[in-house]
Image 1: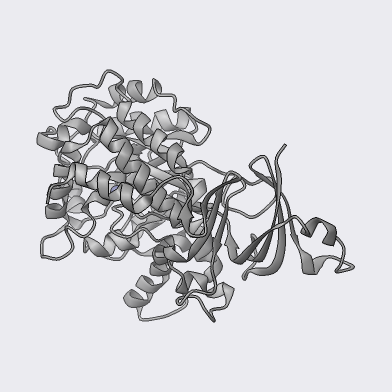
Image 2: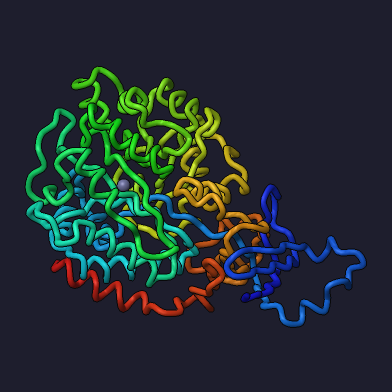
Length: 453
Ligand SMILES: [Zn+2]
C-alpha cells in the first residue's frame, strides 16, 4: 500500500462555493482516503504529527480537469489556419490533409505530445473523439483498431486517462453521399460493421475505456443512428455526438429529414443521461428542451467555436433546462481549460449584455466532475474520499494570479499556472514540467512529421 499525505494551501472541496485553506489530503493506491480541513480540527493541534511528512502544495489544489472533447491531430493545425478569411469548411479541408498523412506510429508520437500538453494544463482525463480508423485509402490495418490502440498508448505514455470515443462516420452529407478522398479512412461501411470493430477492441491499460460517438447527423444515416445508440446502451458506455455546430448542417437536416438534428437524434434514441452533445450552438427552444428534458449533457468548446466563427451556444438556457455542461478543447487551437471555463460565462455576457450567469463553483464543476462523468469516469473530479487521486495545483503567485483570491482562479489563471498534476496518485507534472515527456520538443518533431508548410 502506498500512502501519501498532501497539505494543500487551499483546496476546492465539493459543494463549497469557495476554496478552503489548509486541507490535508491523504491518498492510498491512487484513491483519496481522507480530506480534512485543518481549521475544522479540535483542538487545532490535533494531527500535527502526520503533517511532518506531508507534501506541501502551495497555491490552490483542484480536482483533475477533464477535457471532454479532443481531436488530437488537430493540434498540428495550431497557428496555421487563424490568420486569413475562410470558414469552418475551408479549415476542414486543411485538417483533412493532416488526417491523410497519419499512420499508427506518427499518430502515437503526435498524440503522446498533445496529451502531455494537456497534462501540463491540468487535464487528468481526455475524451478522444476518434474517427481516423483505417488506412488513407479506406483499407484496414492488420489490426483494424491500430489507430485507436495508438491513442490509448499515447495517453498511457503521457500519464492521463482516456475515454476513446470510437466514432461512427459513414457518409459525407446528410443526404447520404459516400465518403471520398481523405474521408475514406473514417468509414466502416455501415453501423453494424462499426459495432463489430469496436466490439473487438479491448484497450490495454486501466487508464482507458471505450465509448461511442455519432460523428454528426451528416455522417451517420438516420436509420443507423439507433445501432450506435444501442451499442452504447448495451455496454453502459458514454455516447457523444457533434450537434448543430453550423447552421448549414441544420438546414441540410431540415431539408432531408424535415426536422432539426436534435429532434432527429431524439427520435432515434440517441439522447439520454449518458449522452453528450458537443457544441449545441444553433438550437431552437424545442431543441434545448429536448436535450435538457432527457438529461443529455452538453460539451462546450468555446475557444474552438470562437476560432471557427461557429457562434455562441445557449449555455445558460441549456443548463437551466437540465443539461449538465462540460468542456472540451476540441481543435486544440488553445489548450487551457481555465480559458474554456471562463469563456462559458464571458460569452454569455457578450450575448446577453448581462453578467453573472455561472458561479465560479459551476465553472469548476464543468471543468472537473461533469466532464469526467461525461466520459464515464463517475469516480473522478471531486476532492472527496473514494475518488481517484487526481490533484491539480495552480500557483497563486504568478504574474497572472498574484493577489487573486483563490475563488477567482477560473477568471485569472491560465494553463501555464499549473505547477503540479497528480493522476491516479502518480505525479505527472512537477514544478510545471512533465515528468517524462519533453513537450515542446516532441510537439515540434511530431508536427514536422505530418505537416510541411
Ligand atoms: Zn469535434
